[in-house]
Image (cartoon, chains in turn purple, brown):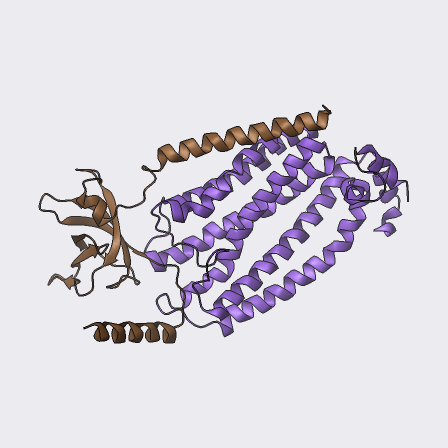
Length: 263
Length: 148
């Protein structure tokens, strides 16, 4: 193992071992590799439990019948689409301030998964909207702001892909990620601030949930499964990005020459 | 000042400016971001005249009248303070019910009747099994008889 201290020492205010130790791709790569399988297993187990509760334990809804069961996918997906965007903005801010390469890589690694969640939220919402509201789509504040979030993800990925120099691509992407983050509270509070067709939040940090307990549990377990999947997918992708971007460095060459057993 | 602190200040100032700008924009737009108008707003003439808009509220209990032609319905949308009679021809969504939320798009006629071209059911944030809904309904009835 080559000296990880040297990379840590380059960061100001980070002497010896601390969190910054893992701020270099070289040391983060094996750690990310070790975390992958626990994430996948956790995601699969939680998803199985969550779907079981959602389909077999949770009762039918009094007004919507069984079509409400879309919430077991729709709500976790919508939550994750917002959380992932905030995480991207966070990593971009860290990257801009501390000039760490890995932060921007984390942000790029999160984007496709976030876009996937936003798309799933929009798609499942449309499928639920038809039987419940009588329409697939309306231009109300909640739906429109979530669609904008999806476009922001797409714009971030497109901009990064369009610029060849990774450092400039990172900075340009960071601008979208940080500026676009103001959309997230707008999505969340849209149902409070304006009259929307979309109903208000059933689950919030400030009030008791307005749904039956087993329904709530199914939703929360599915949300945890979504978290585990998101972390796993981001780690898998960030490993690929690290190798691609650092392909000219010694540690990647060593890895390619059979040093992979270190992972 | 270290370069890192300078960057931190720059990013911080940028984010602060951005948040301020968005707050102002949202504040300015807040009146135009309305998906529907409540009957009270319509009564106060806040809704657009001679233009299509949406009204939202509850379908008043006992107000739903199906017309002989089979597809036209009359009902009253209320927000408990004001009420607007609505006429609509077409298929209603499954969740359309008296006492439940509704959003209707259309125009306000001269005679004060709202001629809807589209009716959507608005669902609330409550999810419960039928037994719980039944129990709630019973409790509500019991309470109203006590009051009487």
